[in-house]
Image (cartoon, rainbow, N blue to C red; front, side, top):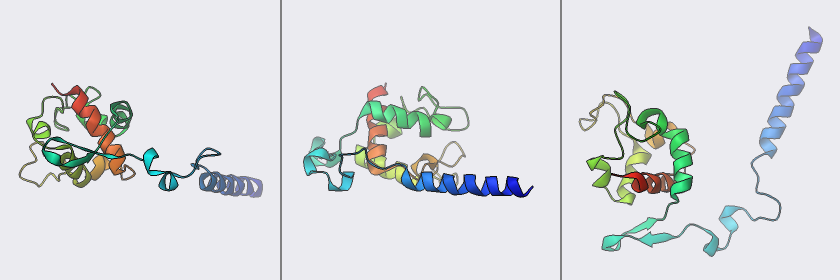
Length: 147
């Protein structure tokens, strides 16, 4: 029994050490915050002169599948009593990318009168790790599949 306890303790410590050391930049690369401005995502002007970050639809599809598909469906056509069809949504089409970014960041509680599903849309789709850049990639993906 004592050996089992020691083994579990060692595995736990190793897991914490690995977690603390993981996720770094590959050797030879500066962290994103210190990369030259040319390497960072730049805002682009939309129609009307608004500023918005450009997104990558391919990255957005990956992020969509891991965060949004559970409610909006893998084909973004919605799931009954969960998430709306994003391909044909007049709501989505009526928002600028910046407005859609703000909406996704805030979510929509079931108690909101504009919520027609009766189900919470959690902030950032329930993934607090999503950055604004990640969400802009998702928006670029959604825009690329709109009907």
